Image (cartoon, each protein chain N blue to C red):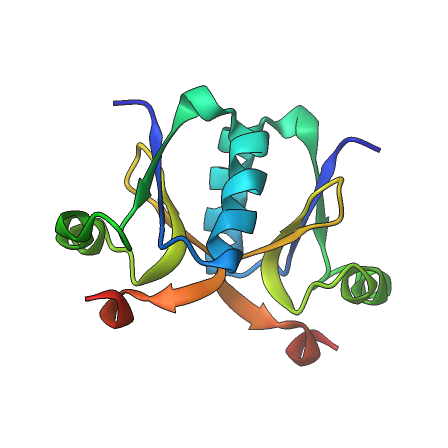
Length: 76
Length: 76
């Protein structure tokens, strides 16, 4: 798949970063997942190497942790 | 200006993030500044709200701190 995945938790920091990322890479190039609401996606995010949100996982597997909203461990 | 500015300090974390950002937003949309080499740009980065590198400053002024390479204070 060629889309990046943006994980967030709905907090202010996350929402602001989401707007920036969508603007930068284009909404068609990113799937947005709120792991604050979709708890089942937390393990998926962790398996991708996400340790805090907001974070962007690239198609090549690289993880970009952007600013700092919340630690994954705080969302469980 | 419509370009984002990517500040980095040449470290491994920065270089990796630089590749990701250039890939995501396109090299024509980002100016890359190494403040490890161009010390005169440190105050410019600080005035933009950059507190650590790598960081991306958007045209609208928002700062995205990406992963963590080095604190600005360590680069002076």
